[in-house]
Length: 284
Image (cartoon, rainbow, N blue to C red):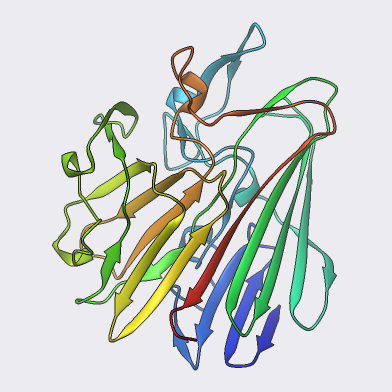
């Protein structure tokens, strides 16, 4: 499915996890384009994280007096990763010249609550806005979280600018253990080259919902809704992409100590949680 507005182009893959296949402006890719014929969502340009984001340690947590045990996500054992939405086909609920709405209805199963989700993609002369929402369709309260997982094009001179108050330092299994100053992992506030960074797979707290990616005199602006209070930055070694993921809670938030503001939302029956992300170009 394709949208074209002015000099912007957007391609979607509803059947592959509700993913974005590509986003370009004047023929230049802002997100890593999906290879033709790809069947692995980890090769796409962006996908939704629902009903939670990032890792749950060994897929286990306690909620409402119950011990919840999720199956490990294939390829990421022993943890559960990013919920179920990215591993299910979505359907087209509505579409017009500048927008598409995708939907997913999910029964109780490994995640023991009924839920539904919607993604709205709005393409304009200013860029792309993605709005992701999650509704609790169960008769019981449900823990909830959301995120979006864009893959940005990474060139040798690409720079990331993202100011944050702290970063979650991780253990050997990529589970966060403590909140430290950004310099404990990688401080992005001064716009360093992504290629100079070490391996990063960490959540940044207090980022203010704004970041920029600069390369070849072009600046891509990333902004997120105020409830996306964490930005998960993923910089793999030696790749041609990196990720800046706006999320509504920190990794393993369902196992956070009592009293921590970890970002987990508890939705009552019929209640909805939403977040949004906009990708635009400075000066356009």
